[in-house]
Image 1 (cartoon, rainbow, N blue to C red):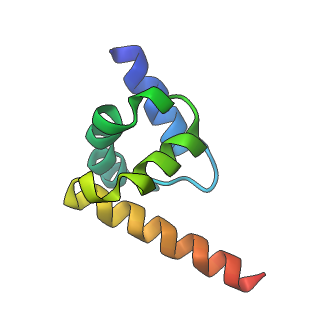
Image 2: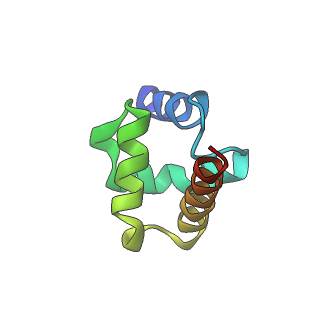
Length: 80
């Protein structure tokens, strides 16, 4: 379990652009990733997609992180 948690942190926060950018983001989404998207660990892209697909099942705090991430991605895409 400890190894999976460490891998999860590396995936969520070691990739760019990271879904979770702060410690508070990590704390908000880690339980949801473990509960809903554990099969996708350590694939950061798959975890992100899983969280977006399961948005209605996310905790409120993690849903805010995912929504913020989606807004940021749209803003970056619109600049191109």
